Every structure is written in structure tokens, then in C-alpha cells.
Amino acid sequence: MNRPILLLPTLAVSLFAAPSFAAPSPEDETTRRDLDAVQGKWERPLPDQTGRVIGRAVKEIEGTKETISYFGPNGEVLQVHTVKITLERTPNVMVFHHSGIEITAGPNKGKKSPHPGAYLYKVEGDTFLEIQGLMIQEKGETMKVLKWQRVVEEDEVI
Image (cartoon, rainbow, N blue to C red; front, side, top):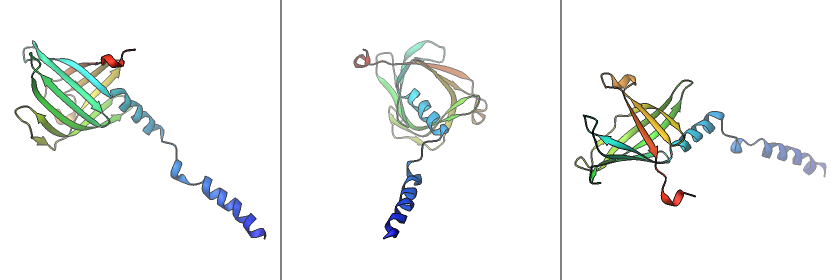
């Protein structure tokens, strides 16, 4: 008769000690916040090699997928590509990694590249700064800073 009573504390301890509901680590929380900050639609002018604006670029991030569309002066689609993204935060910089590029529209539609890439980035409010040309694998490339502005859809305005 005492045995069922002795089993109850053992059962209770094993239920509460189960690791299946472990809280996320602080790194996971930070990564999730960083990923949340880049979600949505961003836009910037598209300059030619002389700096003259000839169109616009739109970056859309949904989850871990980024799609960038390039539009000409009359709104025509010049190229669209998608990549998978991961974010990395170090003590001093934030790194935006991308891989698996696939061109989905434009003259090079269907082309893919397995080569990953990365750049430094920073999000402040509605501004997304992308700093290219500083990574070791980009030797010889010119550094450039791209400034994206968050696009607020009309149905998002309160």
C-alpha cells in the first residue's frame, strides 16, 4: 500500500526535471531579436557606375530568406535573386551571411552559385546599413556602404 505513495515523488521529480522545455540561451534570444530587426521590405536607390540613379533596389527578408529585386528607371525588373541568410553577432560587429544564391528573374534567370558571402551590417530604426568589401574573401573589392530604408506599406500605417 505504501509503494504507490513512494512512486509519486519519483514521478513528480522526473516530470519536472525533463529537459524538453528548456529556456532558450541568451545567444538564441539575441539572434532572434537580430533576425526580427531585419525582417520586412527595404529599399534604396540603384546607381550606375558614375553614381547617377537609374532605378531602385528592393530587399525583402522573410524568415531566413532574402529576395533582392532590381528595377530600372521605368520600373521594369532587371534582376531578382534569392539567398538563405544567417546572422552573426560578435562583440564588435554584426555579420550578415548569405548562401545559395539563385537568380529568379532577368537575363541570368536560373543561374545559381554555391559560393557563400558575407558583409557587415547594422540596423538602426528604419535604416539598414550594409558594408561590403571588408571581409577577407573579398580581397581586391572596393568597399561600399549601401543604405536601405524600411518600406512601410500603406496598410501598416496606423
